[in-house]
Image (cartoon, rainbow, N blue to C red; front, side):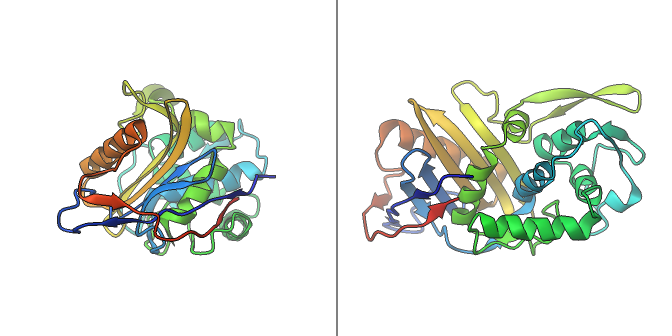
Length: 282
């Protein structure tokens, strides 16, 4: 049972939207210990979430207590026929479920994520039902997830809801370990293939990352979820709908400076305690 953390919202308003250099259109930064929201920008707007979806996919799969050594073969049904996205996992590749999960989370492979849902007990329909139940249990009232990859723009949520999802995902050691690996070698059809984390901050000097997931589609833009440790404090940040991956990178740097100095995020942003309300991180 996950603890309920009550949070107090401090709304940060921009002195001038045109002057603000924060690149992500939707964002939230939460102190993991106190639940205090340190910064937010359009955190209640419902938008597509791309591959951030895969954190939910991983949780639901792990909740079913599967055999992580069971072999899964990538089939035609796992191929993206919607956007024809690329994959480094060839058809016919057979891997233990733990490595398929690793590919889905660390390198954000869509075929891997699709195969995890297809091999869920009861298949895709049972997987989607379990996802809906998980969303409800976490209190993610503004979230809809209809498939396991995030390719569909119908997979949508808010930055505030995704902070709840990150909190829940952090309770799964397997997810934490995979998403904080910089790279790994996986034996694929008789040869070792090196896969890298899609978050280039993982393993970078000066960053202590406790959980990570990136996402991108044309509809969602560039997205990032991270839980980080800085100066002995744990913080969750969610960044959505940036025009470039470099924007999420620089936004994360700005947030780290803000956390380190406990000052205003950008000179053009004034932090005002405009009003207070509470929600639960389940």
